[in-house]
Image (cartoon, rainbow, N blue to C red; front, side, top):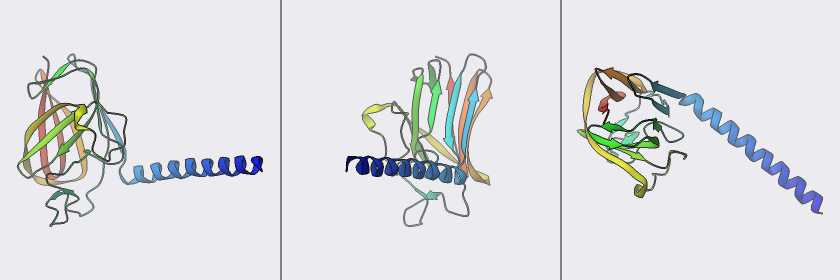
Length: 182
C-alpha cells in the first residue's frame, strides 16, 4: 500500500513539474525574455524582462475602453516573472538614490504620469503586486506620446553624456528616467 502511495505521489510530482516546464516555455513564446545591460563609464546595470506584443490591442487606457493595462493599476512592466533591475553600484534615478542591489521594478501607468517603483522582492512572479513595505524607491515621471507605434514592449538603457536614459516604450507611450552617479 505504501509503495502505491509513493508511486502515485512520484508520478503526480513529475506530471506537475512537466506541466510547469511546458507552461513556462509556452508563455515565453508569446512574450520572449530579454536582458539588457549597460557596462560603461562606471555603470553596471542589468534589466531582465519579458517582451509582450501588442497584437492590435489597446495597451494603455481605461478599464471601460478594455485596455490591457488600465490606468492607475499595478503593472509588472512586461509579462511572466517580475521585471528585475540590477545595479552593481549606488546610482541616482531622477536625482533619487538607489543603492546597489537587485530589485523588481513595476509601474502604475496613467495618461499623463507614471509612478515607477523599485522593490526589494526581486525573485518573484510578476503577479500579484509586491508588498509596498519592500519598496525602496518610488518616483513620478511624465508619460510622452510617440508618433509611431511600438508593437513589442521595449526597455532600453541609452548613453547620455555622463548619465543614462532608461526608457520604457510600448504602443504610443514613452516613459524615460535619468540614471546618474551620486
